[in-house]
Image 1 (cartoon, chains in turn orange, green):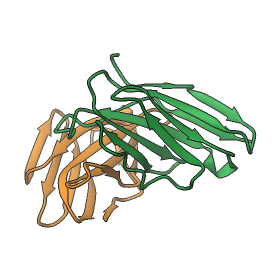
Image 2 (cartoon, each protein chain N blue to C red):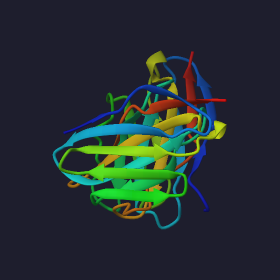
Image 3 (cartoon, chains in turn blue, cyan):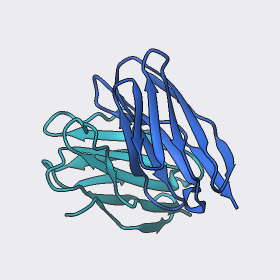
Image 4 (cartoon, rainbow over the protein chains, first blue to last red):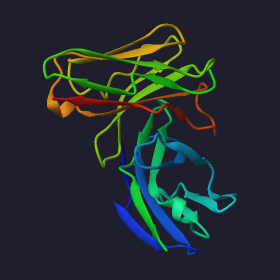
Length: 110
Length: 115
């Protein structure tokens, strides 16, 4: 089975940097995804990590350590529009199923 | 199509009625997923279709829930004898086989309200 943990809520200030952590336990790992979901909208794909290390995409970066079962999403130069829920999801090796954490709701204040 | 299309976008139904939700995946995407999201909560896996393999139904919460998919096209999720706890947004996602690094593309969801 799989278990995915992330903080429920976080707050940050416009222009700042915020790190959203995700820890997971899985019987078979085949990649970790981060999604952004604005209130009332569908989740949108942000990043994918399958090997250890940091993947950078503009203001957003995602890190993975498979040995520690740990990932984080780093958001730089925060903007008000970054206020959203951020979902961590792990894909199971055997079933190819994507299992989501409960999401972290980020509020960015001016 | 260009994206994953779900219909209806909103559905209000009376307790005890049956409902059918539809998902049109991206053309060529062999994998299709249904998730449920209750207000303020995360995504709960319901069912997964991959090509011609038997679907993974391990997430369906009760036998009132069923889903079908014809080949690699449209899928329908049916909820029989709806209950108030079925009220949620039902999201469909599709991906290429294995999803690789491209992620899963979600539809806008069907907001189901059981009154």
